[in-house]
Amino acid sequence: MPATTAGNLRCPAERANLKSRNCEPSDDRQQDESDDGANHKASVRIRRVVLYTRTMHEIEIKFRRLTPLAVVPAYQSALAAGMDLHAAIAESVVIEAGAIAMIPCGFALEIPAGFEGQVRPRSGLASKFGVSIPNAPGTVDADYRGEMKVALINHGRSAFTVEPSMRVAQLVIAPVVRARISVCEALTETARGAGGFGSTGG
Image 1 (cartoon, rainbow, N blue to C red):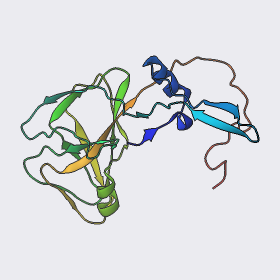
Image 2 (cartoon, helix red, strand yellow):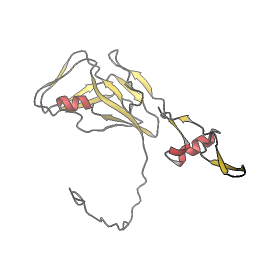
Image 3 (cartoon, rainbow, N blue to C red):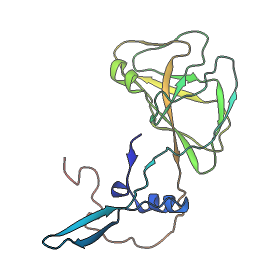
């Protein structure tokens, strides 16, 4: 990951995070003017800028294997957002065109409170075979302790075969904000108002 200077910090929160670690970045420039007689030359001294490497936030998720066929979810690249989910099946499963099949993953997870799991289609399966997830993204709540399963739908024109241990979806862990509903008699007026489907053009 690229090193970053104070000049391109993304948000004040990052500055606060660095300050809490006693490594507050600075891009202050102090200019000392010295007179050498005929010419007045300015010598600029640039204070040391703390370089740091951004690291992705990590949380711990407990994994419980329900069958020996289960494969532990894993990221396939350093900055991948989703972990691959594998089919925990002993035999191939054929999904006919237009059909939906539930593919077991053979494990259960304990996602920390304040987070959810989002089950999303794999781009390769979707673009090559028309295989996707009907309710994408599927939601795995933090209090769910059952087996992870993936609903696959075949939008293609021919049958698709899911092989044992095939990567069938990806799991993205995301933070969740709980809403508090306030019942009221009126809502704040906006220029858009009740304009709905297609109201903004296109």
